Length: 83
Image 1: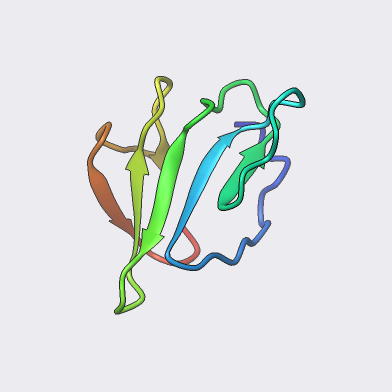
Image 2: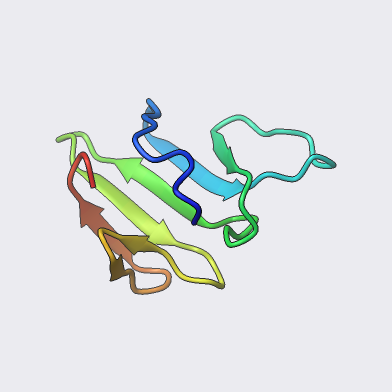
């Protein structure tokens, strides 16, 4: 990804889907759209449990990385705030 949104913070409750921005598609609630061609239309889903722990599930064809570590496709991976 380009990193043009580096440092950007997004507040979410329960879950947030990340996907590629498409100007021809009606925006859906609960989706963070990223204007970058390396992002899949349904790239990943971020969730938080009742204890405040955060998890990401890679749904993409291109793969997802957190702190330069590639996630296992389809597996839920815990990550720390600020990653």
